Length: 92
Image 1 (cartoon, one colour):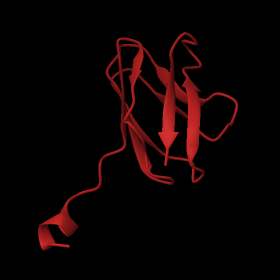
Image 2 (cartoon, helix red, strand yellow; image 1 turned 120 degrees about the vertical axis):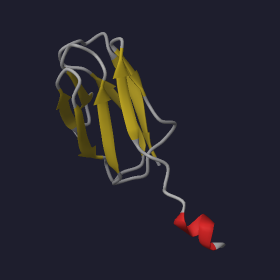
Image 3 (cartoon, rainbow, N blue to C red; image 1 turned 90 degrees about the horizontal axis):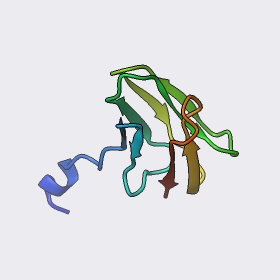
Image 4 (cartoon, rainbow, N blue to C red; image 1 turned 45 degrees about the vertical axis):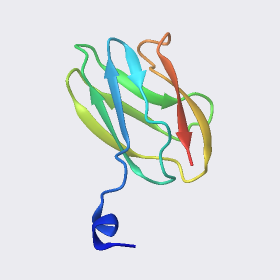
């Protein structure tokens, strides 16, 4: 492995919320720190539906972080304020 490859940052784990929709990365490493950027003028949550592994709230224009689950798999997420908002967070 070359020095430049070793110094390359890992792919960022970022979920962006815009226009009442989640923009999810393809996948996130188990236990990674996930950044949630809320670009809307309303509060939103990133809440695991069923598993109860994570639940984070981001106010209007806020950026927050949470730790991804250690267990690989697909986690359905919803916004508790806006249940029509849903997405899939892939860990692994």
